[in-house]
Image 1 (cartoon, rainbow, N blue to C red):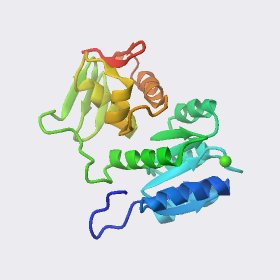
Image 2 (image 1 turned 90 degrees about the vertical axis):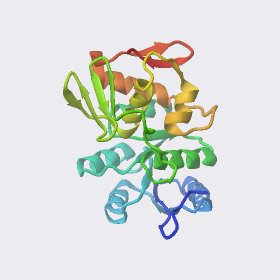
Image 3 (image 1 turned 45 degrees about the horizontal axis):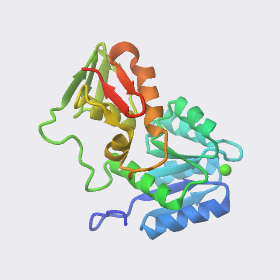
Length: 238
Ligand code: CA
């Protein structure tokens, strides 16, 4: 069940999916968890629904008729709308394409997915964006400023700089890097990162950690070294 503060409306989910059977399945599972769900079947309607409805999160199919999901997300970002987006992709190569576009995708699931998994991802995205009471940012004592190499993260303002120049990181990229930088040199297993940064249960099959590390490396270049420990996970060099 989704956590709702007394007197507050439940988080709303806009589901953009053109296949009615899949849309119905997603709706059923989300409504069971007391989310307010709206389903639309194409990109133009989706953009309108985002502007008017201000959903808490958008579950966005990539393969839509006409304007595809990545274009919907691109236009949202162009409008300055950073509503979290969970992409639904049909193929693995779509994952790289969508995440590579740097649209600020918060996560993705690949079809066929289990509805339970999708619901868990929606909750995790909302948690990361501070919609749930247990959305605990950095614990007291962690200090608001983290440094490694030439990268500085300010946990209060959520600003990142590399060699003194501001770098735009998505929420997830920032959270992942901050997590690694809190304990420089320590190797974080993928499973642990999935649990602590994404809030996923152990065994969730996803390449999302690797994809996000690749994005961080692309954005930060030589400012900080995110080291791959083969077969285990990642660490940030002090
Ligand atoms: Ca589709």
